[in-house]
Length: 265
Image (cartoon, rainbow, N blue to C red; front, side, top):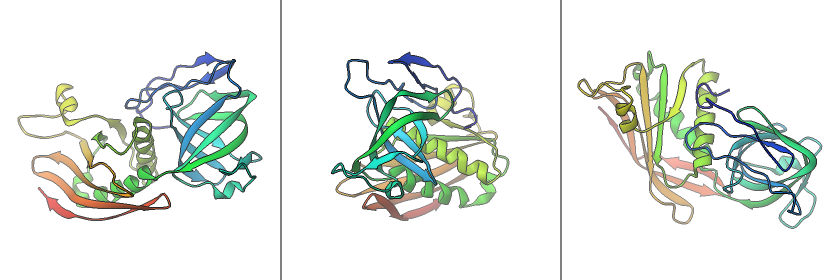
């Protein structure tokens, strides 16, 4: 579970299925097509693949939550409609999950799809969240002294134009999971600096975020298969680090980046 990213989960019944909603960032509520539709389909982008389990962020406005599903014993077809191996599913792919008559999305965060009858590969897009996860790890490990005593981790993704809201929630979820894998038990939020000030979490007189760290990502619109971004972490006026003008490049959906200018405050 993702600490306090998912504070509230509400189940809605639509077309005989349970759909998940939550409170992480601006996660949107997924809905399944109504009974007049020919098929019930959840369209998602593969954020992470671990063994038989996929983590998906919704692509359309009606399937914009974060969900998992097992591909075990599920028919997988390629863009030509031909049967293919589930091992070929990779990060950045957009897939249609065709739901069976008794399919559901279980109450949890992420939601858990059960009862799918087919997975159809639709497209290969760029795995931007995977690339940013590596950038988060790098900025976090720069000047590790700043990490001491941090109990509140805040991501400001409001200036990222290359991720959807669902992808931002997915990045926050994966970042939370990575921190916990490193025995860093923190509460992870998505907020801006101004929101933290408004909520009284930052001492504006001393320019200090008690027990907290703010990591900010800002990027330029992607052109072709590359874009420029900056990433920084901030604990106080005299405790901050950053990487400016980093260049991200994607090949067959997989992203790498070169570091730009490093700075320390």
